[in-house]
Image (cartoon, rainbow, N blue to C red):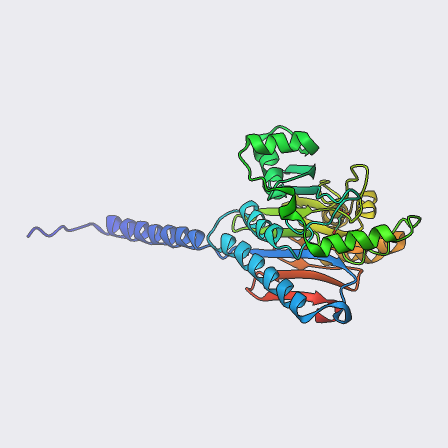
Length: 344
Ligand code: ASP
């Protein structure tokens, strides 16, 4: 066997080369099993949610649905898929859950119909899609996402949005499939009340659904889906499909999904204002979200709450109502499934 003799210079150069190669390989490995944080938060609406008016069965149903959706969204992130995919996954599950005011189980309009709104946004490119006043679509969030991914527009409405969704091959269900007994009774009660008030007393809880997520690539996404408000008329549109009011995502600041009395959230551009607080005023996400929800909205008389997530995976979920259905899996893996105020 031939033995190769190397001179001292070649030997030390070879040694340096081997060390450099080892460092490169180990940092490449560190990238592929990245320790970059992932996190997700979801909501199922805010309102007069108190133990006294909640049956055990309803509470169990809500907690199970929240846990299933937040875990499903988190699994998408854990597999290395995008925050867009994660929020889509969580919302489609919540839309199918009749306990929430989105997809099946949506509130009813004055005419006793279901007309739904949804929006979705990605924070790395500020791409957004929304639909409003759509009927029959099993998953309005998929239509919003199709607007984001397959159209040059941001928002499509009514019959046009439905035609677009049909052309994209999205699933439609018969009107009756969406309507629950609970929502029929809620509409009856609302219609029996005097019309005068700007804040109908029957609007005791909202139960719109939303999700925000951060993926391994540091990308944020936000999504919101709703049937709007009980007894709505004249094609009323709330904040949920409005980018900046009910939904916003910007990788430089935060992702937000809101729930509450939409008219106030539109006037105060709630989701964008929270992100703008951390971007332009250098506020922490928690401070910015608290200020908008507990000061700006409270001063204006607007009830509701938000879920918000910053690029480091910090979650903030303030609300100014008695409760908010909410859940999160934090960057350290801790899971929260919360309903009432005193659970924080
Ligand atoms: N924000 C929604 C709307 O005004 C209602 C809700 O959050 O449940 O349409």
